[in-house]
Length: 234
Length: 305
Ligand SMILES: Nc1ncnc2c1ncn2[C@@H]1O[C@H](COP(=O)(O)OP(=O)(O)OP(=O)(O)O)[C@@H](O)[C@H]1O
Ligand SMILES: [Mg+2]
Image (cartoon, rainbow over all chains, first blue to last red; front, side):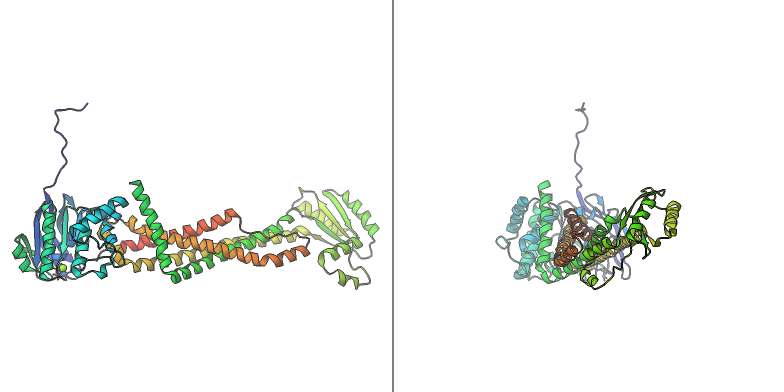
């Protein structure tokens, strides 16, 4: 018999989405890319990651996506220690992330639809769900009606929005973008940033690495600043 | 969920086929090379199987042929045969007279006309001695053989079993040769398919990396490549079967003619349905195995960045 007086089961929700704890990353022949970096992001926070070229922004994002492993310290994603994650667990960790790249990383020989659908296909969703969700995501980024096009036939801004649709299609709790507006003009950049703010509105945590100081200042979110691998402002 | 799982498999199966069809020349060349290797193995297998079938009827013939001296008459031969029948360990003895021998020779050799040119029958009287079945080998048979050789009417004796034995050991050698050859050709198939898959993986490196970044498991990424391996092996197996069958078909007529001249003892053996299925199954399996081996090794190296 169940004891009705016992404390009810509550799913554990981590209020902290991402936590870096004294993290250093040393590349074999390039020295320290990150040195003793400590910070955390609350669920639903919006933060920029800035710093000069070579400061370690991309490296920091790669540690979160387990594209690299840190040399010292700990990275915790949604309470899970990424240091101890096995190769088998990596795909499931990445499904919690929406990754966006400066070079879009789209499949050039596949249609917009196929590109956006990829994370769902990979995760084994049914045809029906995939169609519905892809159209919803494309609608969100303003590309509805371009499903059948190939990426090459789209402008840079449109391709980046395909990348964003792909990143958010399986509703990840954390979006990581590495210079998502690096190749875009200021007006397009603002549009893309507004998209990210929309995702934050629905509770998604967003971390964006960028060079664009003007844009960062104008938007007024939290800023993590790296200098030669050290976190100098957070 | 099961439906989705099946969808993924069906999609991988057909998209890998589509990919092969989109590069028809390369695929065709690979499949041709593979099917040449496979049909070589199957061809040799059939060659040996056919020869084995031909020699299969010789199993029991451990008989001794006694060639009598030229001056011994047929009547004396018959008497001698009666005497030999009373020997221990002899089951039967049969006389082939000079004339019977000539008639048989004429019928089976095809040299009948040439023989007419001879004014005298050159063949000796022959007595075929059947030892008892238990007398397979060993000192008793040797003794019987010696006794028969020592008879004064006998010119020389021949133990037919010896050449049957020799033939059997040659066949055994051929059999083992086929196994060995098949093994080597299977290795060739493995390496060729493996290399094809490795190139394919290299060509689709970006795709693999992007799939990994959006959370694809190795299992998911492997799937289409395993199917590519399957298709390569499967189509090569089918093609090899067709090639072997066509080759036999071409040989059928001359062999029938030859067989007709020799009392129709030989009918050619094609691959049975079961053998064809095994051929296709083995080559498909080799394709998948090669792909799997390459993927296990290569996918660990293909990491984002
Ligand atoms: N794979 C690697 N192997 C060796 N060194 C590397 C590697 N990736 C980055 N580095 C080094 O680590 C340091 C930080 O690089 P990182 O790419 O993180 O900088 P970044 O802040 O993203 O720069 P940018 O703004 O130019 O993209 C650099 O000195 C770089 O040379
Ligand atoms: Mg960078």
